[in-house]
Image (cartoon, rainbow, N blue to C red; front, side, top):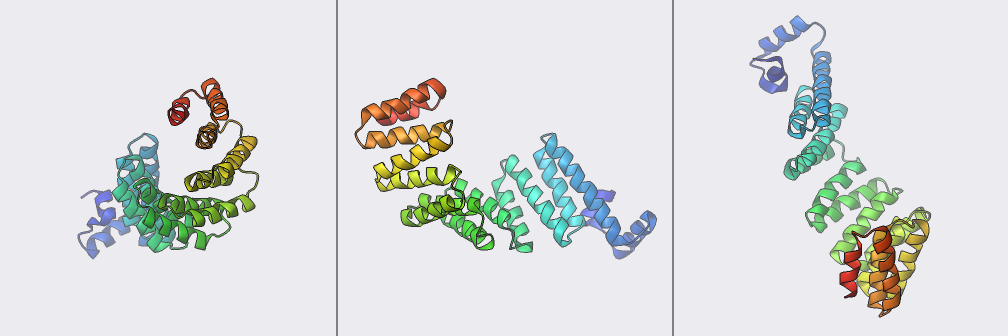
Length: 251
């Protein structure tokens, strides 16, 4: 039996464990922590080399070796990241849920789990996770923005608008709140209001070319083809890969 298989939970008996740690020297907890740190480092190396499945296995070993609170939380979060890179969303979700069970007040884990739900178009559960993140960290504009996006995807436009207005109040120099609010107004058919928001986005970040697509679309909805064409001209000159999106919408 190898050292790693023993450390990962394959101990045959207490006597075997005692012999192992007697040979290693020092107390058992310290030795387990040392082995867990080695597993974490091995997982990091495999992640860097692109072996995401191997990295996840190493991080899982670290949890088995040292299930103490802080180390296990770190390993679960790293494990989830590796699983996502390996396109294994099911195990990534399990890892984040394990992390949350140990640290329910970690808003970042709730957001990351919510992001997976969102990517699966499970907006109800995404909303639940983002709501928890906002409750835990109500001063995070990123958490509030995520919750607003869930509301927007669910068609809860008034709720989405409230979240995005709050983001703008918290971070008026950033374009994200204005852009999300413009998207909400477009969904509601409030195209003049949407135009105003998208113009603010471009005023803050002139190379946010997706905003030109949305601005041109809003002008098209307002039956202002000349202004829509102006946005298309910008895209053709600076971001031609996005131009067909607006061109097809105008057509």
